View 1 (cartoon, one colour):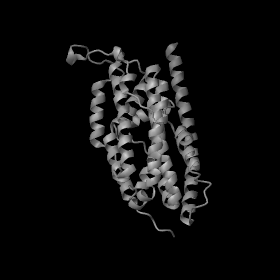
View 2: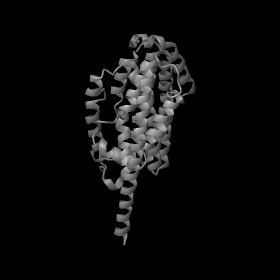
View 3: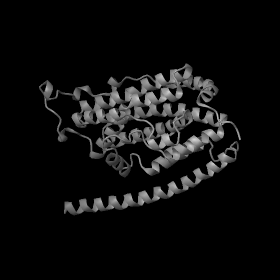
View 4: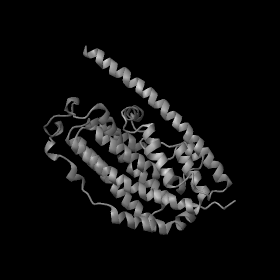
Length: 322
């Protein structure tokens, strides 16, 4: 049985790959400025400055778009917690530190541009938004008690998690832009999604390299993430309600999670084609295959329930219009 590598050993082993991917990111990333994406001419003062405070009729966003925009923004707001986790598990030395700093700086632009857009266009209640931000950031983001109990707070789990999470966030942002019915919001969210895609590629490449260095160890982390995945927004106010709305209207639902996040990532790493796993890895891979099969069934069940619910709601609207 191969010896398990410690986090310091893995970081050292993968340092050259990290440096290569940091340099790649610098070469392909695009500079952009949040203020260039905000329609400032639509802005006006609130009551404290002699204007009018927010009221629901001022918003041009649908209920679904508001829920998605708030969820996406509050997720981005929690950046200090994510930075703390990244600094702890990736270290702040050498190329790892360079990446953590650059990634943090790029992520910060997302909350800046989303909040500016929502406040200027009066898309959501800014008071409720600020209260939700205070609550969510106070609680922060970190491993759950169950995750700590499993001792899964190491480097491999972290890099596997963000590989899936960054891709999931990209999907959520991109689909949110589509439901806003506003070309300005759509452009903003396309820009953010492009960032998230580049971030995902860095982490996905690092996890792929880890699979080469420590196949069974890295596979265990991948399986743990897939089987226990949770979006970083969990714990924010109204997360469950907003998440249901987003799933119901195709912004981020179980089908998208399976087909646009889980399967492509596992395929990129050739998880079910690799021949370098040991006996423990082979057994763990079989368990993952069973989990994916069960997840497929859950996706179908969710879609059947959603279709029935949407049909009932459509029928109610038809009757109300008579």
